[in-house]
Length: 345
Image 1 (cartoon, one colour):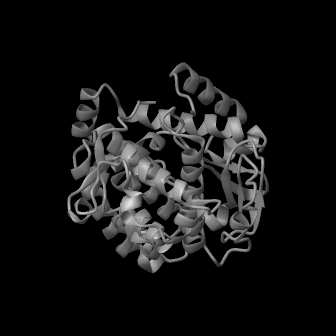
Image 2: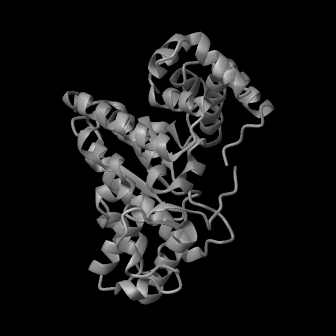
């Protein structure tokens, strides 16, 4: 995993930082106090194009934690932050045809509001489990610059935002619409805040933090009439994303494969979506020391390793769900993944 530059000023202040600041102010904190030791003045935050570093944002959060007697600011901010603070992608909560559409859109385009989230994109974070559940593991940044309090804020902020997204975009017409969450600790003094999230069940002291729902709730579309609006929004998000990032053809192809999770994309399909010829796509991938088949196999192998590591389903069932003919083929893909040096952390 690449090591990010925590001092680089790449976070648009008008998105996550301002959204969090709004909540902190609603909780009674003063802006000058929140900006202490950040190098940011109250006058600067009204500038349209202001960008700050990850460390500056962490200092704002640390100041809020120090000023607060509340037990979990991460949960409170995640439950209250406006959807528009996530950027254009925040509107998928109103337009996505399914939860998987909204989930994958957030996974890619939240990088505009928080460029450091790019670190999460290459790792599969959901898998099928027993009882027809689909489990999404929650990652946080693990780095010496993050104190335990900041790591907890990050986890609980993402947990609260994702549970809101799940409840808003999950299919309400399926038999099981319950949301279960698990956290890898016991929240001393504020269990009720976790229980107050829009979920049916909360588990503590789990091996890792997660959100789990029935796969139909996650996968089945229910707002099909909104598909044109959603696709228009995604096109806008992609334009913004590419204007903010140096996006390689390999990364664009990875996104297409993730986005078309239910389809087995061919080279022709991918070329059509990228509006270039198959030959041109192959040539441009070769210039990046890659190929269509290599990327497709890498993504498939990562999914295999994720399921074999975390899912409690029998290997035969995992093989069927992931499109393999048998468990032996699944294991061969896992061995290929290891040979390519692909890990899950």
